[in-house]
Length: 73
Image 1 (spheres, helix red, strand yellow):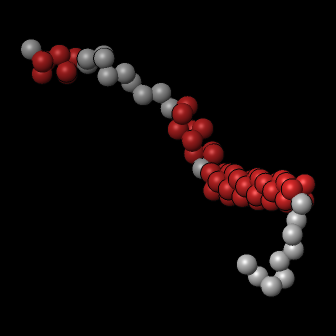
Image 2 (cartoon, one colour):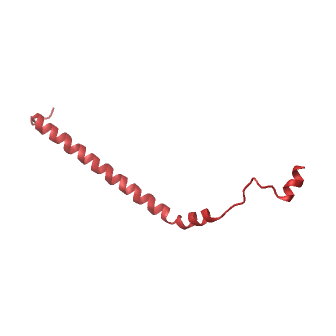
Image 3 (cartoon, helix red, strand yellow):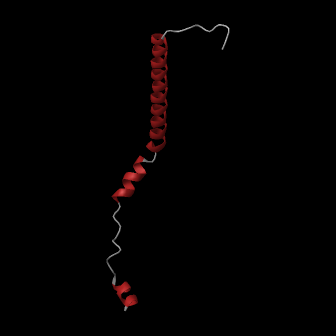
C-alpha cells in the first residue's frame, strides 16, 4: 500500500482493533453525555411551568351541566 507500511503481527493487529473500539466507545459516551447535558439545560427553564400545569384540575367531559342537558334534549 504505502512505502512506510510495517508488517504487524496478529497480536498487534488485535491490540489496535481493541484500542480503536475503546476509543470509539469513549467518543460515543462523551457525545451522549453532552447531548443529555444540552437537553437538560434546555428543559430546565420549563420545569416550573410543567409542574404548575399538571396541578391544574380540569373538569371531566363526562359531566353534563344543566345548560348541556337543555341542548341535548
